[in-house]
Image 1 (cartoon, rainbow, N blue to C red):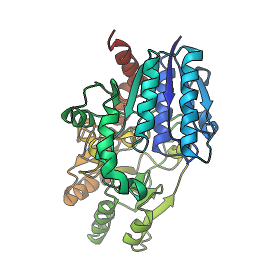
Image 2 (image 1 turned 30 degrees about the vertical axis):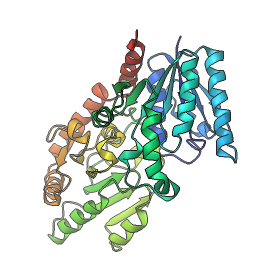
Image 3 (image 1 turned 90 degrees about the horizontal axis):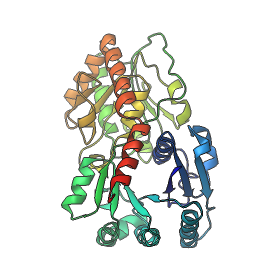
Image 4 (image 1 turned 120 degrees about the vertical axis):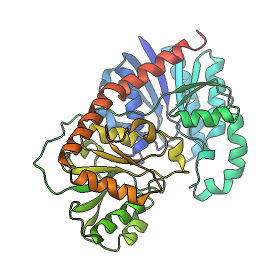
Length: 384
């Protein structure tokens, strides 16, 4: 049977909570197993909670490396866990998710895997140079890490990158390895989205409240529409939590029609929205990591069968076709955003059409199964 080893080198990757990175990893695992590929996963503890999300658990073997108090001691143990797993199960391909804080460890593990004659693939969702919001010790060491990062990353022969923008950035900075561009995707929502009777239309944002989403612009647009006596939108709803939560609440000035619902269970997300009347908002900012990443959130939105309004930043500009599978506005143009909100709020037929087309796009073009089939085929083809 075909097999892959997937390495997640953060000891708290699963234990720190349900977030986008977990959804992404589960998508990769499920996509590989959907193609009859046995997946061995090596990471820290906390995976047990997410086992119900496995589509084919029989094809997944999770090799837990329990967290210790000393990070580097844990990493040494992880290295030997990876090497023993490769040897025991004769795994030909290793994929490791890149972590901007662990370049040296990834360099060492790259050498170890390649010395054993295996293909080592670096999964790159972004590089340190793409970030402008680093905090704490990472911000302090950023100048040094930016010098070290290219030397480490360039030691890999194969890159699984999530966008053409990121691949172009790497090529322009003299990264010589083989680039395999595989955007993110979404699993189909396992629980059917309920079709409910139409209620008042809401603007809805689902996900982490982070700086690379222009959530303040959403508030401005909503408030201005209300001040113009536009009654087509009843509420601006934020589901999720993040670094911007406190400031956003202050910015909302206690308005009753701007509601922060807090964290939610990702497996029950379909219960939070009404696809016939909710409008899902995706306001990526330009000049941020969003230019280089791949919008998993867009594909998750598509799975919910509700209409989407997005900015034109990064891959959103490629995947959202204005008037066909969503509405799109220029990220800097609040008036255009307001016009799109008004247009969609007042037109239930258009909402239904966009949602239907987006869901069909997801089913035919953007599933993890199709993404991982392409990735595996490309890895096998390299140097064949």
